[in-house]
Image (cartoon, rainbow, N blue to C red):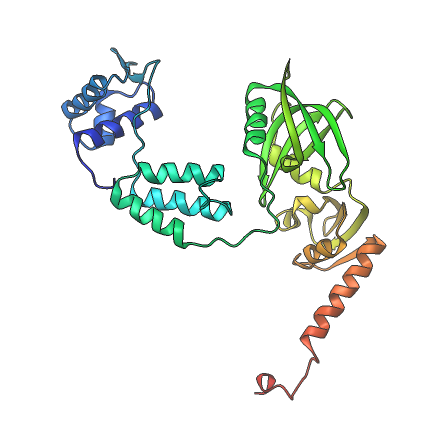
Length: 329
């Protein structure tokens, strides 16, 4: 707990520092703990008495490190940390209060392991905070997600059973590069051997994942987030081309990569090329760009932009409506 200065709490803090900085010296450990070097050595002795394998090496490059066979001690949270964890889980998962759900069950175990005063606050927040459902979120199966994350770490190929939004089902072998979370949706960035191309698959649509024995090497300097943004901008039903009045270096800071690729036409003009399956959403995204623009290709988007513009004009009413008291001086 916050403010606890008992020898046990200090020893656990010393363990955290040693784990985070292998080879930390006794004087550095003492400085971090805010105690004398003698006291720091005493906390290390407490850890060793608890059968925690703290190894030490002498010399200018020596120090403390955790040896093999460590069994982690009980978790120690401050009140702020515990409440922050509960709030984050409630905010991110609609079933965090359900003890039959894996997330709710796991959160309950953490709360029960906390000291009574901290647990009481955490449980009060957990029971009385009602999180609104995020309709755009699509949370995948935890077991499937764990398998895919482990495959990314181990660099092992997987066979996935996938179902598209339209209901089409297929099986493919892929090299999983990374898992990316974007706006409540989980994506697997990978190379599909079925189509011999890079792909982004929604993990909530993966019905099963099987680890294979084949290993792989991911692309060097992989930027999985940028790859996903680029992927989401292409391959959709309606092609789009927009010319924007503004230099590309300024527009790159305000135009989402997920709606298309920016190309410099000249020093003061930029072209946006992309695609969409939802012209209304795309038109709304364009409306947020702080510059004038023209839709030069995409009849579906043009029609939607006109409808959106008319809707906004109708909502605004006449420009000089003196019958509205709020418009009068």
